[in-house]
Image 1 (cartoon, chains in turn red, blue):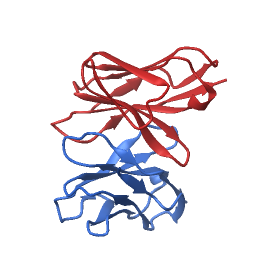
Image 2: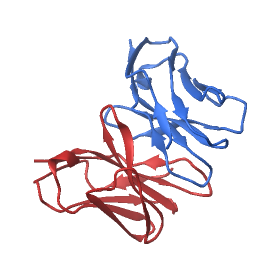
Image 3: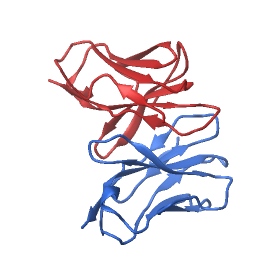
Length: 113
Length: 115
């Protein structure tokens, strides 16, 4: 089974702090994704990575950056957290050319106060 | 831009009965993928079913089946013989073409199965 893990289930940070969310997958997948999930809005793509050190902006990249130094790990960075970034953050991975399905991590519920 | 619309925010169904969730999407592409994902309360999102647009046959996975109407751009999910474990939020998702890899999601439908 594919396993996607995220570093924290719950996180509370203060406005202006730098926040790191980590995601690790164990299936050698090419693609990794970061989404934010908000009620009534579904999931919205923040960033996508299709290879090590390669990234592409999603629909809502403002205020976020990402890092993928190793194939199995994809980090989401909030350079200066703001209250409007309070949300559920979901990481996903997919095998790319070997299949379109995405496999999700358990999510990190981030609260910025 | 692709959009995915789920018009039913919440649905409730009696155990053992059938419920149908609607999803419509907008695209000018001809070959794409559609998915239904399930997110149980406080648990991980999992894939329920997938449909390739070039396939006319509707996908089925055990008690879950879809009604794919390409011309109408409609992709509904039917849950038969509902079980308590089906209680979850269900998301419809769209991938605009093979090799694109990115998904667009609907707002979700919360399904509650009553005992």
